[in-house]
Structure formats: C-alpha cells, structure tokens
Amino acid sequence: MEDILKNSALSVTASRKRILEIFLASDNALAHQDIETKCADQYDRVTIYRTLQTFLEKGIIHNIPSTDNMIRYALCNEACITTGHHHDNHVHFKCDDCGKTVCLDDVNIPAVNLPKGYTMKEINMVVNGICKSCK
Amino acid sequence: MEDILKNSALSVTASRKRILEIFLASDNALAHQDIETKCADQYDRVTIYRTLQTFLEKGIIHNIPSTDNMIRYALCNEACITTGHHHDNHVHFKCDDCGKTVCLDDVNIPAVNLPKGYTMKEINMVVNGICKSCK
DNA sequence: AATACTTTTGCAACAAAGTTGCATTCTTAA
DNA sequence: TTAAGAATGCAACTTTGTTGCAAAAGTATT
Ligand SMILES: [Mn+2]
Ligand SMILES: [Mn+2]
Ligand SMILES: [Zn+2]
Ligand SMILES: [Zn+2]
Image (cartoon, rainbow over all chains, first blue to last red):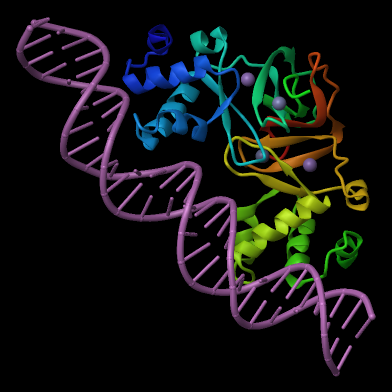
C-alpha cells in the first residue's frame, strides 16, 4: 500500500493509506460518497476530494462515467500505476438491482470505427443490467 | 414540435416547446446548464429539471454518461419517441478540444460478450478525442 | 535525532447543483 | 365554459464541489 504511493511519487499519509485500503477492500467501484461514509469521521470531505483527484492524476484509480451524478472510482491495474497513464481497456457493468458497478477486467472494449476526421484518445463502455449476484 | 409532445401524451406547454426547440436547434448534446443559460430568464430552473426528467421518461431524449459531472442530453430518434422506450444504439463522442458531445448516429455500438451470469439491458459507449471540426 | 523545506490537511466560507412542498396558473377534455 | 388534473414558479432546503489559508505532517539533509 505504501509501495503504491511511493511508486507514484506521493508522500505517504494516513488519509491516503486509508482511502487506498478502502479501495483494496472493495469488490466494486466507489463513489466519493461511499468513501465519505466510510471515513468522514476520520478525514475531512475536502481531503477525500483532493485525494481522489490525486489518485486519478497518478493513474492509481480510474473513473467510470455514469448518468446518475455519481462518478465512481476503481483501482487501476499495475500497468497504469507504474507508467503513470491509463492502460485500462475493460468494460464496466452497473447492476440495476444492487446498484453496484464493477470492472469486468477480462472483457475488453471492442474496436469501433469512427467517421472520417475523428481521432480517438480514450474509450469508455458501460453496460447496465443484472449482475451475477442478483441473477 | 407539438406533435412530439402529443405523441408522448404530454400536455403542450410553453416551456416544453421552448426546450424542445433548443434541442432541435442544437447540433450537439446539451447539459442542464446549457439549457438554463438559453432560457433561465423565461423559465424556472426547477421547471427545466422537471422537463428534462419528463422527456427522459417518455423517451424523447436520452442521456449521455460522463466523468465531468455534466450529464448531457440529446434528442432520440423516431423509434424511441413512438415506442416510449429507447432504441438508441449509437456511439457518443466528446471532443477534448471544443468540449462538445455529439451522437454518432451512424456508428453502432459493437456487440460485447459478458461473463456468465450477467444480463445486459442497456449499453453505453463514449469516445473521447478530437472531433472533425477541431481536427 | 534535529532541522529546514515542502506537501498535505482541516477549517471556514462560499458557489453550484439538485430536491421538495405548496399555492397559483395553465391545459385539456367534457 | 367550466371543472378536473397537470405543470409551473417560488421558497426553502440539502447535497455536492471549490478555494484560500493557517496549522500539521511528511521528507530529505545534516
Ligand atoms: Mn474499471
Ligand atoms: Mn445519442
Ligand atoms: Zn447486482
Ligand atoms: Zn471539437
């Protein structure tokens, strides 16, 4: 955990360790709010915002787009952390029943052909439906 | 314009017509804020929220996920409006330069295989990069 | 281990975004 | 034209996100 921070040239602080810990312990993506409810008593709301921002910039976590005003975050894989930019290319799944969003690490985003003149930099795919736990 | 509302069993009001008009006149997807700046002097902020919500439910517009806390909305095609549920299956593109988000109506979202146990209901694909206007 | 330097944190104050209840106004259909 | 129902505006409120700055903690150096 400290290694992750050091590898990203970040100083090791209690709040960063705690927030990393929360991510490591979670099997699904977390919104700011989720993290806040887990540690708002220990750390300030602003610190959580700033920590998530920092983790994003360092490629420790990635964010998952949504249409519910709840941007969710999940840990990146090794490659993102060591290189400092994102190598995630997987599909995300949000369950309509339990509401959880997960990384489908083994499901790659298929290629797509854009019209002439468009240049792709990043791509996101989010599937909604029923997850295997709720099935 | 009135037809669209009537087909969706909505009463025809000034604000609904105006917001529809704004969508029809726009070549890119609009966030709540965009609409507000165009007609906040005429209609209350709350009315805009409620109108977007209603249009969404009736399948007149669809929303486009994002990681910037700006959910954007775009007009649906005929099929969505007449059947009342969404038939959009196209890719969205957000330009990193001009910031505009557009529907790529001709680019279908490719199929993707989910792991066992997952059931797909809806799928969203958003590509970031440089659009043809900014190229 | 103590120091100096840098970074992070907490707090306060604020701004922006979104929600809710209710009285008034507008639509629609009889 | 009227009565019933639906939509709107307003006020009040909650939640979310941002910024500046002083205090605290972390890091590197001696
Ligand atoms: Mn992921
Ligand atoms: Mn679209
Ligand atoms: Zn589920
Ligand atoms: Zn552009």
